[in-house]
Length: 52
Image (cartoon, rainbow, N blue to C red):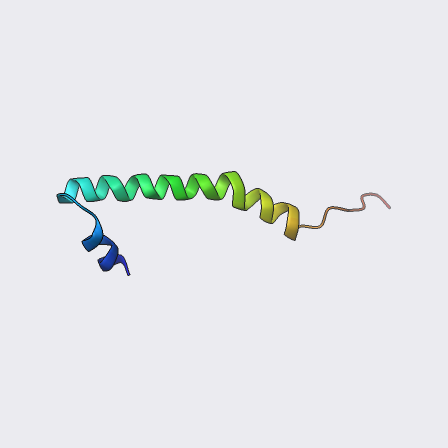
């Protein structure tokens, strides 16, 4: 899969690396912005009891 992605990207090696880094940053930003908050709201219990 990674080899196919590498072959599809245009340009010399330095440009391919730059494109991959930008795509990686965008993917991490999307996860932090939308996926992780959604998962926290959906999967973690909202009610907890403290005290005794």
